[in-house]
Image (cartoon, rainbow over all chains, first blue to last red; front, side):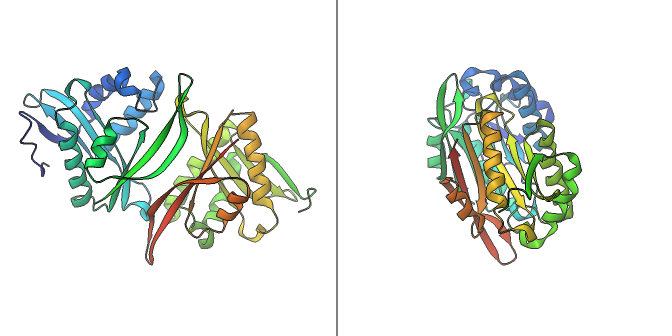
Length: 172
Length: 164
């Protein structure tokens, strides 16, 4: 698929996701460092979220980043394509990078490739993401030309504390 | 509005044909993301599935269904104190205060049964219902430009919420 070559990261490859990438997603979503930025908290929630998320690999709208000649999965980014025609010109996306491999440019490379896929293969005009306040991923969104278009305070209630959700969008 | 005409009950799967009929009306469908019969059927199936949770109310005027409103109960514990809702009022029953009364009933249900703290909605640019939401105390927290794409252009979507 590769259009934005991640040449600056040794050994990084980006391919379409497979249903068999689900265990990597599962491992990350059970990791408290990752889970805090997602709505999931319990086993059933995580399993349902994984089924929905990785299910988009059937439409080739999900990308997986790998290292070590494909042996290590280090990130997944997915376009949640809209099911209705009047809204099919844009979509929500989700992305996660293995905490062991963060801050190495993998997220940047995945996001660039996902934007390319969205624009050139699915002919999307915009893509958006919902993040929780203080998520370090927001820094990357700003660098990749995303802008905030909605902020809902107290959307998340976790361990007695409230957090806002922020919606960011980029025109493609 | 005469309260003797208007009653509320929990919706059931048997209300699905009413939803389908009302959504098929072009002047109503324009305020929803669906486009054709297949998409309407899909949306009605999802919508009415919440009746199992008793999260969906039907308003009846002289025992005939005239409006339905739904709480999309969150599947995630971290978000369970918030809820998106949607409402539809039969075209020929507008202007009788049915929408306002049904939303007020839905807010009571949200707060008392589901312990919802924040109720939110999504409404497209130009939809006259936005004024009703404002009167009921909903406030904007975002705007998604170009959310809807139709033959004659784009429509944005407002996000609104009310703390219960």
